[in-house]
Each structure stands twice: as C-alpha cells, then as structure tokens.
Image (cartoon, one colour):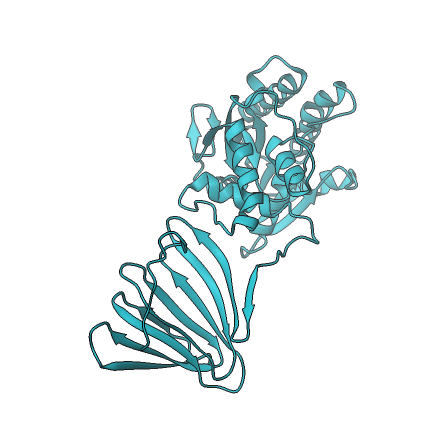
Length: 369
C-alpha cells in the first residue's frame, strides 16, 4: 500500500511515520516544505491513502495562514484530481476552525475545501479537528504550550502563565497516531461530520505547570510521578524528551562507610522506596527486625547469604543468593535478618521497602540473627 504523508517532518508526521515504518507492506511517500514540488504530482498518481498533515501555525505574516492551510490543500486536491485518484484523504485540522481568527479561518477553509472535494469526486474524506497535541518531538515556542513549558523548565528557563485557570483540552501524540492508524484501516472514530481522537485530557493550565515542576523536582526528592494517572504518565514521558542532552543522568547520595555503601534511588509514599546496597567481602549487614515494615532483596552481583531467625526462636534459616541466579527474597515481618557477602568482590543488592524510612518511626529493632 502506498501512503502519501504531507507535513512529513512535522510533529505528527514524524511520530506517524516511525509507527508506519514498523508495519509490513507499506510504501511511504514523504512530502514536506523542502520537498521538490514536482514530486507531488508523482506521488498523487498512485498513492492509495493520503495523510494531509501539513499546515502553517506560526507564519511571518497572517497571509501565510491561508496560503499554507488552504492554498496547499487546494494544490494537493487538484493534483489528485488531475491524476484521477480518488483514494481516501485524511486532514488534521484544529478546534480553532470554529474561531474567528486568521488561523481558524484558514483551517475552516481547508476543511470546507476537502468536504467539497469529497462530494465532487466521491472520495472518502476524514477531517480531524484536533485540540492541543502534546508529546515527544513537538517544537517548543511554536504551537504547543506544553512543549514550551517542558522545554523551558527542563532547561532552567522562565515560563509565562497568563491565566493558570484556563482549561486545556489535550490529546497525546501516541493516542493521535493510534487513531490515525485506525483511520487507515477504515475504523476511524467519528462524531458527526468530523473524526476525533477518543482520548482527550482536560486539565487547567496551572495544574500542568505544577506537574512539570514536580517532575523536575522528582530527581532531588527521589520521587516517581503517579503513573496510575494517564495524563501524568503521558506528560512525564513528554517532559523527559525535553531534557538537555548533558542532563540525562543525576547523582545519588551514597552513604559510604568501611562496610560498603547504601544509596536510595526511589522514594514514593504509596509504593515505598528502592535502594542499592553494596557490601564489601566478608561484611554482614542488618541484624534487625520489623513489626510492619517489609522488604525485598535482590542480589544482582556477587554472592552471599541471607539469614533469618523468628523473634523468640533459635532456628536460623539461610538463603544463599548470587548475581548468577537472580531471585527475590522476601523479608517477612517478625524475623530478624542479615545479609553477608561470601564472595571475594563487592556484592550488590537491590532492596525494596514497602515504606520510606522515617527516623521518627523507623520500625527497626536490633537483634543478632
């Protein structure tokens, strides 16, 4: 199947193309502003589906809105007509097509042109009035406040919020691409004359900004955003894509002594904390028990033994562990426990605790195994 994509280098275009390229039996014709104009006629001769994603958002002058959003659409449809090609054509418009501004008027003109084309030729037309789209690869300081906020906050640059109470309707780029693929397979989501992306997130602008700042602070706080919330999960993924390339990593505080080190990696109030424990050869750590606090140990390098003894009992239980055979050991409540490095090199253990350590209520009681 031959597919023509206009605006191929744009935000939606790039995300759509990398998805389509994973599918079999597709040939993609990519057309953008720097493509040889003569190729438009070549591509429209035998293309079997058109994703018309090209558009103008931030022109030098307002006249370019109509030239880009109406004029090029006209050129594309005329080229299809000249080649007697009535394949389906999908256009990404904007909810602003209902507004009385130069951008909205140009989008509305492009929609009307496409609907008329469909009536004239019998071609299937799909018009998507998209709300604000966010996600990776969106240009900051161009047509997305979310992209601008993510970029600026990640780069320690100021942002400007005129009204934090403005309600935003947003769609995530992956949800957009999934819907476009459904449309390609004749399974589009329709609402009257228009097509829609069915998953829309509604949130105040100020709340978006607060979330993005919380993402930035999560490194120092060792926190993880609430991944159970769909919008937070998608916004966090978007924020990470704007990190400066020299700031992908961040240091952890290593608590070091002659026994090795202990470093917290993640702290969450609802899912506990994850830490990395490094033990020197021959070192034993632990010898304590908990009432309610529970843990999971996973040795990923080296070899050792985890010992348990139920409080009030003399019986010692041993679990030999090694990085050569990964297995998680639960640390039950009411058992004093320790972990000893039996190898000749450092032993590295990933430790999860069901609650973050609270020095005011440690629930940790010393007792030799």
